[in-house]
Image 1 (cartoon, rainbow, N blue to C red):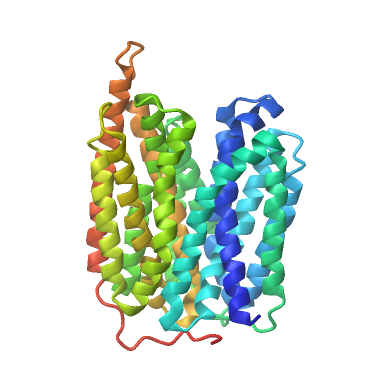
Image 2: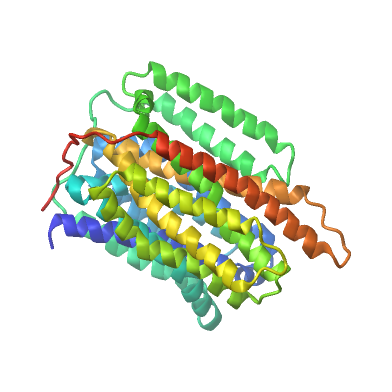
Length: 460
């Protein structure tokens, strides 16, 4: 097996397992809560801790990948993820399991910061979008299969086996990369910006933690404010550092800046869709969980099918056009969701999920291709980290906004509370539509990619 194929296989495995484990855990939460004798609501921290751990050191890890080698950082991240997952399988308490999820997030932060950079560096520019598309498809397959396999394993075996399975698969990914003798480096001169790393970690952790908890604890606005102060300090430090974690001059590149903004707006608009439709289908429409799950499965299924196609198209045509087309479709699907009421026919709901899935399947690979193609090889680590920062930040903002808006909705105890909930969900979808429209505008404003693009060639 060539180095290129090993990298491709390794990245696909981790792209699959990260979302797979997350969606498995969501299904297993009631069972875990019973075993540890704690409220299921407390276990929402399993997702929050992972998110905070993953985003906390993304940019510092990206810089480390450029200095120490992307294969090396990727191998360390996957090995750490495998070890932590194995330990998590023997968790004696809920708090220990939450701590392990945070460490899983940190471990995958190493993977996120180097994975796409490694994938892009190992493929020539004309194959970059296709490779990114298959990586995205693996992510959506993981999201699709997670609830199914997680439910079966939890019901008939033991939820702890999910972590053992994750450990084994991630270990295979680590071994695939460790057998590669070559490595890819970025900008190695100038050392590591430690003050910038401290400011970034404080900013990302406090901001996302404040956002995630703002609905439940209003005083968290002070934590959010502290995060924004550290963000200002981080930007100040990056302007004066000789070798910053993030070259702010990159944002003078319209393609890079607008592609990242489009990604943030897209994830802000789309991440909470599954949560909202789950509430709508089960509480407003009265569907059972399995039927609702089948309807919701349509979105990631379409994303998995179309991502490789969209990635390949973005190699041959302007990524701006492919991504903008996808986001326009997503906007249309979310707008349809804003019209749902208690009597909306189920086929129309399914059609909206399909449209959103098709749109996201076109947008994500093409947009990532545009971001990675907008920087030189030596900055692939930083660009790879920014892709993950925009995704995770957008996801956190999406859930924070939805939680805040739902908290403001007054649901009476009377029989008409489902209509009140339905109205609140329609309002939220209207707000998400506005965010998506802004994303379409940002996507179109990015301009054309360079006509003489540097060939990111790797192994043929």
